Length: 97
Image (cartoon, rainbow, N blue to C red):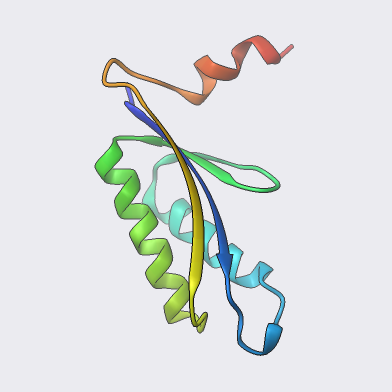
């Protein structure tokens, strides 16, 4: 079982005040390619896995946005870590029909 949930919201600065959504899409592509369990939400994406693995995905996201032309990126991150295990499904099951 995974030991970490990590939610991230990327806020890329864009050249010439362009729309930031294509940059956010690139960040989500990095998550998708990583293979980690994730859920895209309107304001952030939550990933589930091992702490080191998820932090590596965050690093790759930052680099991908810079490579895509963003001069700088702010990321807001929330981490829930439990060595005994944690999951998105377990935390949200009582809210599903």
